[in-house]
Amino acid sequence: MTSFRFLLLTAAAVLCGFTAPQLNGADYGPINILPLQSSGVGGGYTSHGYYEVQLRITNRNTRAHRVELSNELPSHNRYSTHLRQTKTRVEVPAETSVLVRLLQPPVSMSGGGECFVSIDGFRQKNSVSPVFDGSHAAHPYYVKNQAVIFVSQGVPADTRDLIQKEYKPPPAEAPPWTEAGQEGATETAAPTPVYSGITGRPEREVFSRLSSVPVSEWSDSFLFYTRFDCVALTAKEYSELETGKPAVLSAIRKYTELGGLLCIVVDDENNHNWKAPQEWTVETYNHNGNMYRAGFGDIYILGTLKGNESRINPFRETVLKKREDLSARISEQTLLSSLPVIAHYGIPTKLILVLIFLFAFIIGPLNVFVLHYWKRRIWLLWTVPLLSFIACVTVLGASLVQEGLLFQSSSVSFTVLNQRSGEALTTGYAGYYSTFTPEALAFSMDTEVSLCDKSLQTSYSDNPLSLRYELRSGNQLFTNGWIQARIPAYFYLRKAQSQRKERLNFDFSGDEATAVNGFGADIRRLTVRSPEGQLYEAEHLRAGQKVTLKKLGSSPHKPSVSETTGKRLEAYQRLSRTATPTVYSPDYLSAGSYFAEMDSWNPFLEPGLEKLKPFKNSTVVLGKF
Image 1: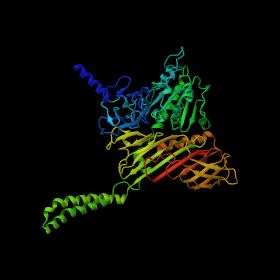
Image 2: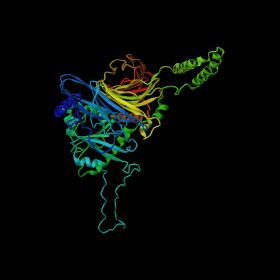
Image 3: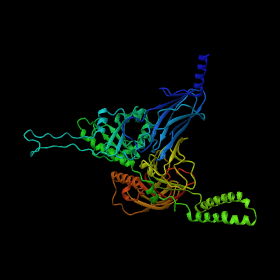
Image 4: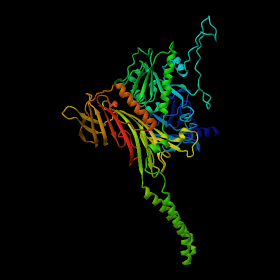
């Protein structure tokens, strides 16, 4: 009887999904969930970008199931802004395996949390572990001068080791006929590293994170790579991705073009067969034969280091410089003044104080006097609560009448558009203000969203936020906490898209040059350099309008590709560090390009919230046709 009861309990546990996680994943009845290790192993903390975890869900049943994964912290952090929950939901067809991802935005989830599973709306008893390691975005201050490189398995081990070690030339030996301290003796001292008084380690460090899977199994989402300061792979692996995994290569390209650093390891730095993509070749520059530019990012060609170890230091400096660029964010306090989202902050204190004193007089002395006169003092039991309720509704109504029901936004952004390929690279800041807390802030999976909050730069905050994040229907949803009622919230946005249809159409064949605005937004000023190098200008182009371009005289200076690329990178860095909009200069425009300035929301960025009212927007599009 005991054995029979044991068998029944075991079968019930399997059917109810209470089995414990196994080495090959966790079984929940017909559902198996297997976490995949793809983020790599190695040292160094990451403090910007997204942390991604991939999981494979297998449905062995003959009907579809809805599976929800929710990674949650067990307790509330009362001292700093943190991510309380990140979750995703997927419909798994019958007898099918699907690959899903959990994402952690650049907000600390200290401890990593615990990943719970819900199947068809019923939460299972056992969780999936491990998922997040808890170190991402946990130490933004302590690791400000520490960079992390994501390295493929194809990069030689000795190269990985050298990347983490600063090259120190051996001391020069003194000639045999001289002694140390005498004239003619030479001595080269190794550079002294600068150590941090907080961590007890060198402040300027470069760590490598070795991928645990081959490049063919890397993520096809560019958000996965955003937390790394550099991505390194061999020229052979790059070629394999071109032919076998174009989606993975597209994600790496987006990461690079949005300001990242891509390192291509070759056998010979100056004589290699790796070729940059055509879109990069046209707008790139060559620096000492080992560096290219692509969009806002860079490509570093790293040759064999054996016997040439001194070349490792320039590469390390490039990675550390990229770390500074990717980590540069403006605090919300600075953005409050440089990018306001409302004319006046605060609540109408004078009006509220007047109403409070008025109702205090009505509820107190006047109410008692009237009821005493009517000989109905027992009515105080219901008149005081009623008048108090009326007072609260009146104060709230007066506040709403004075301020209104607001959903306002301000933004400053910069977009580089290649009309030939349809690729658009966008970066900028967006601020939001809402009278009531909105349900969710929504962005596509092509957008990297970083919260600009002062508590993210320190380990303590007077007003910490407990945030929740969700992936739903191919969109990122920033739910409760990201935007609070009557409190401005700012975000740094980066977006890479392909096959965009927005474009400006030009005609230089006739006696007059014309342009048609196909952006779907009004353009305040348009400056164009024709394929022949002539400058033209037009103002106040409404969406869909066709205008005649005004010639701006002769063009004595035709900037080279390297000059325009340098100006574009300068505008990107100035915007990310100071939130200053790009100011037009003819040096931006090579032949066949234009500069469009708009006072509206950027058409290449989703607004995040519906029914937004623009308050202050500055959008610049640098396009090539």
